[in-house]
Length: 287
Image (cartoon, rainbow, N blue to C red; front, side):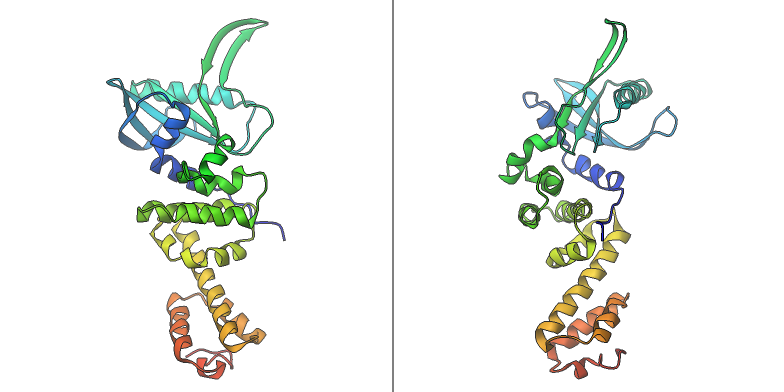
């Protein structure tokens, strides 16, 4: 079965941009001292069908700027023009200079363009440039822990998508001491990894962390489904460890449960049960 593909950027990348704006700034402008002073939410833009989830307000040498992140999987031919019009629209609307940083995530051989050019023949009439960050250039620094805030992206940036990479991601994420950021990073890691691995396997892999993900509010429904799936997988594993190979009817019954309370009660019952019969699962019905 092919890995589940989901549209993850609106939900995932804005979390990284919100939590780690200063880290992205340091990648784009390593020799400049920026101060993050605020965030604008749900910014309407005077362009058709365009909205920014948020803009950061930053100060450099006493002057205030707006900071906007654009995340791209792959380059599109019309993208430089879009950056130009988007940045210009924000600058005009808010009457503040806007810094737009474009971050690319999927590895490519040649560098994507970092400018929008209007020219007649060889004659350049206008040139608008913008900084780009190729995140795959930073995989060594992410793995070392120097840039561990970008750990959820590691599986996407590495050429080999392996379980070993996920192990390293998880270790780096769990070093985050802020509960909300840790929960969001764990949820982000699962969503990104679902491009390359089956979700059922991922919920099993992150089984010990699924409860922490409840603190992540940006994909609540998706996470709740995953938490339940993780509970079902763990319960089946625990039953099989304690009682041996399970009848198919028991596995099917547990996989069909959708109530947290029911799953939790079975987990509690498992602590004292000495047989499947005492779990009251042999007939396909729980108490």
